[in-house]
Image 1 (cartoon, rainbow, N blue to C red):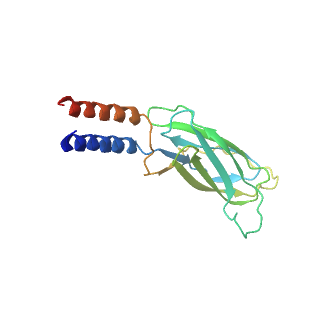
Image 2 (cartoon, helix red, strand yellow; image 1 turned 90 degrees about the horizontal axis):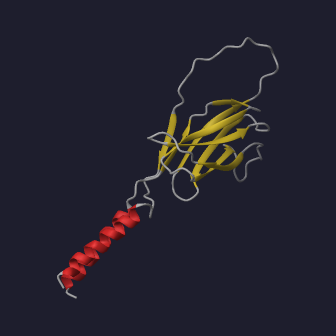
Image 3 (cartoon, rainbow, N blue to C red; image 1 turned 90 degrees about the vertical axis):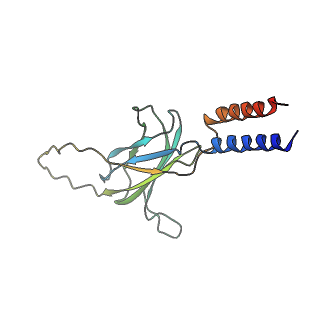
Length: 179
């Protein structure tokens, strides 16, 4: 085998590896949560470009929680499954009952179980008001904003792997054809 052909095969393999490593970055986001009253149930959700069926780890922890800090009541964790959304994004959601959570700031972290897609946000739990009859006011409808956190780290494999392998095999065959 000539040096030229060997260099061509090596170049084809390098190109195939590059194609496999540059699959679109996976990303996920969390909808804004805002202020929550202690004891109410909330749905934390967001959007992602991950395929339906993927699992996301959702953790809700008090902001002051950590080694050396006094224990704070509240927090939860679990998984959310990505559901098929519209043409631009799939969705996920996670139910949280804040009964037993102390008033304060809480951090929500969402991470893809199988990769690098992650997002986080902070929301506040307010103390439940004393039972005082007040008139009911219907708030105006608002559109929740979405906080997106992208991970620029490309994920390996994915659907590009078979295409890259076929490309490399075809190029190697073409280079070997003249033999």
